[in-house]
Image 1 (cartoon, rainbow, N blue to C red):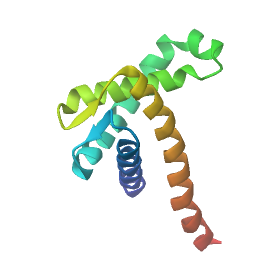
Image 2: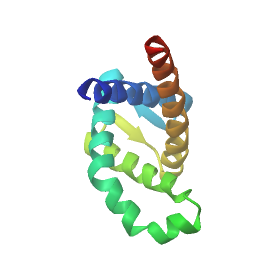
Image 3: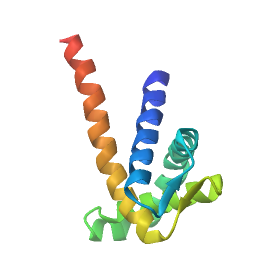
Image 4: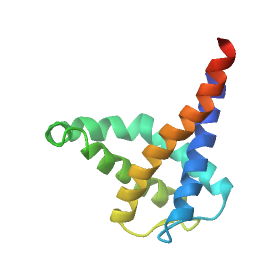
Amino acid sequence: MFMRWILSLVLNAVALVIVAELFDSFRLEGFGTALLAALILSVLNIIVKPILIILTLPLTIFTLGLFLFVINAVTLMITQAVIGDSFVIEGFGTALLAAVILSILNLILTKLVKDPLSSKKA
């Protein structure tokens, strides 16, 4: 369980670094900052995200779940505020686009890592 969480943090950090390479308005000072951001995002996803989802449930239902990307962007902005100058997102639009791309990258990276592991068990 703990190793799966560590793997998730590392994959999230890799995804953050990839997004930072894609956008000039999304900057990280290094992989250590990406790991710290992944850790803070993990904590926010456990504590803050469920509260935001409950508060915005009607809007989330009305948008067929697309409002969850806005909630992910908000958690990214909170993470940036906690970390400070070593993690910069210039604007909510960048955070929203980064949230969409991070979701896609996390899906791809998780699939790439878990498929080889699951094929060894078979």
